[in-house]
Length: 314
Image (cartoon, rainbow, N blue to C red; front, side, top):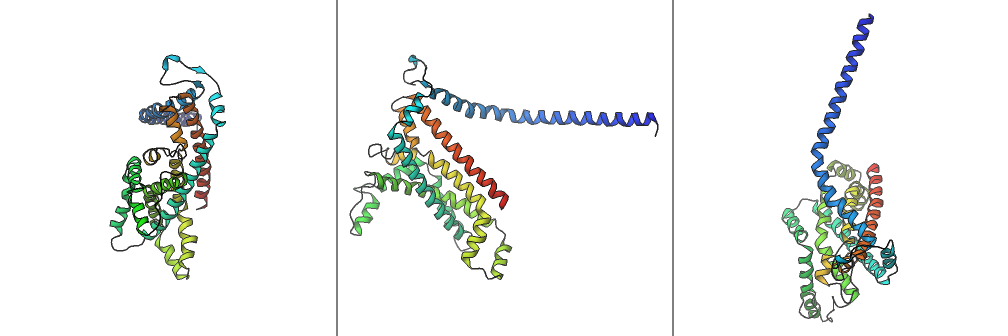
């Protein structure tokens, strides 16, 4: 090969690299052009409110008295909230509510979803009926259960008294109100777990069950050693979503108990709304919302890390 041929080959390779780089850059610009409207909307709808919330939390500010302006107070709002015994009681109540709801929803949802993976007559109709509570608004569910649990003429106390037992003041005492709220939330959101669990169980190949049957595996062994491990990532996603949603529960308690009796059934989200829109302490409400936000983010990061490990394992 002559010097001229070598030079021509190198020039050709260089030209192709330049053309390839231009195509890559133009492709990136095109992708950025398509994504930019969505990114701008997300920036306006998500990033701006979060940064505004954090900024408000460092100021003594009231949305009702905007003429007083913003007084920078640093971490005083956070110090005041963390020193408030009532806030810790709300966190404890929220933790109890989340534990009860998520536990019942996961147990019932997995059990029912496992039964619905099998083919039987009327399965599709039953599945559709089970999904109906999830389609209702939480406020509607709250008022529905409020009427059902009325201490005088509610259907629940009517059935209890029909058995000869004393009526229960479901919404007038803290502990019964907690279980009432947990039951209402479970009734509404267990269909969501059923939906995901059924989809996960149906996604397991039949050949695995057939092989287990040939090996003489018991139903319990198949469920705990095959079905649950292979559907664990989907079930874990359902767990994460329900934990996050339960932590920020507000509208159900607003309609069901109104935070009462007293303030004993106020969740942290309820306290945020009450501080912001009843008392108009915008700075304190923002600080409390930031605390709740970071708790949810921290919990989500921990769970997502476990989910990634689970995905690598299965």
